[in-house]
Length: 167
Image (cartoon, rainbow, N blue to C red):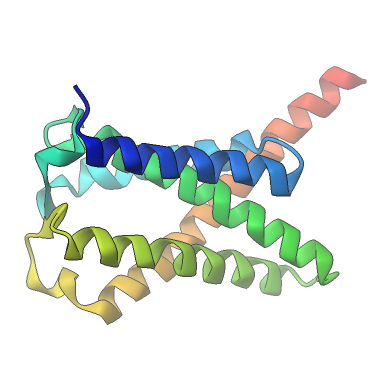
């Protein structure tokens, strides 16, 4: 049975995904795939860097909770969709500014959850450097770039496939 904490976290993640659909006026499956690809890669390849609480069960692999991978998906969809809406409303056409918006919104959306969950001891870092706020924020800025590039590349591919099928 899923612990109460995990149920609350999954509910918040699903709310973010549905809210992204509402504000973006479409499903951005490519953003989800970009978040999923990064989430699986990050959690599996760097599993030795942190330990998760059993309160986040069920585990996907070893001590990697399924909801942590889902969180990467939700964060990618949410942040890239919000960035799309803001950039469109501001009529921004400069690609550097668009990517910067993706990165900034991703970091501002993701870091508070990182801080809260580690403060509540849902995970602990195996290396003291990882617990430094500056290191975490720099990490979220860099990951924001990776997820922006991956999510937008997948979304572009999906849009191209859908466009060809409509013709």
